Length: 114
View 1 (cartoon, helix red, strand yellow):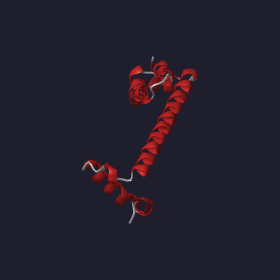
View 2 (cartoon, helix red, strand yellow; view 1 turned 90 degrees about the horizontal axis):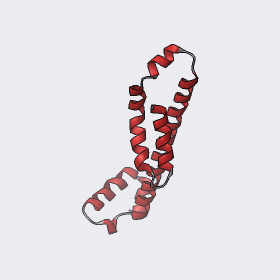
View 3 (cartoon, helix red, strand yellow; view 1 turned 30 degrees about the horizontal axis):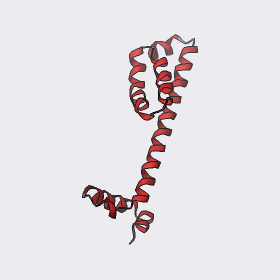
View 4 (cartoon, helix red, strand yellow; view 1 turned 30 degrees about the vertical axis):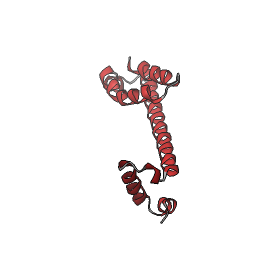
């Protein structure tokens, strides 16, 4: 079965075979086209998930800032709680981009924390 057929018919077996080839230093035998496609798709999924979680964090921070309900504010206003929620996001954002967009996202997260 060709690597392309294996990719289409048995994804798990395709991953096992290609991991074995790459780890043994036989990259020229691996299905590099599909590996590159999978890595690219994984990066896009991770970025989408990061932006989704960041938008939720910003929405909750905005609601909290405009809320008149003291009970809701008392449970979420602690900087430590918000910092704990934002820390995985901010560390991912800092390394996510090499251009200026990471600074913008970092500023958005930090403005919610402090």
